[in-house]
Length: 152
Length: 155
View 1 (cartoon, each protein chain N blue to C red):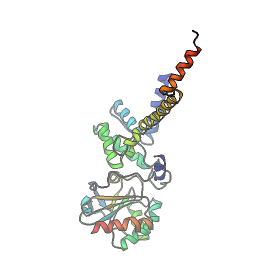
View 2: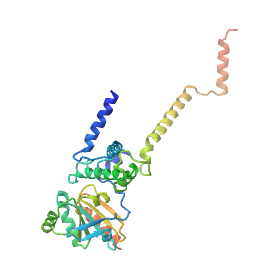
View 3: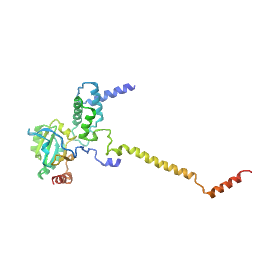
């Protein structure tokens, strides 16, 4: 079953990526890289329909560029750098860690710590309230009472 | 954080090219003269990316004409277009451009990080990109952002 799903995914992604242009690869490895790069990179135009005049062919041009660079023997990293240096981190679905995104990456952890320490504080306070401390006078009273109850 | 994100326009993708020198290129002008990135040296310029198939470019054209009238140097980048239709467009609507670079395959536009027309860049005398405007320039953009910045850079 899992194999079938994987196969279906590979099949579908290659159809989606291929679009109207057929790319000829030297080997399967190149093709897999092309597919995974194309999926990793965001289509800048499609993100916003209101840019009605943006040329939807851009995605195709960028795919051709990726294809060209794979054929030239560029590494995935070089290709991603090429696009990021022109279009910014925005072309990546997964934002890289940098000054601008550090809050984005760490906010869940910060929130967890904040909520955790708040809850811990409440718990501690409740514990304190359920076991009020007694001064020596009160303790003596209790001892006296207990002594009374105890049979001689 | 969500509120800040929601208040921003997602179509305004920040350009990593702002603060960087203009990308190198070799292009012909509409009239067939070869040109390269040195066209941006010595003078503050606007680079306006446009095309005749782009409706927003038509809406923006009037502002470009006004900018040119005020002495702003505008270089055009005609993106994935036909020479004949571009020439007809400029004859019909007026020509605000000092030079129009002809990027028929759109490869130079990719180097400029262009993802939709119109887009406009402000380049300073040293050929450094100072500002990028995405979408058509409105009167407000012109008076509040573009003209003050050009004035400031020209000092």
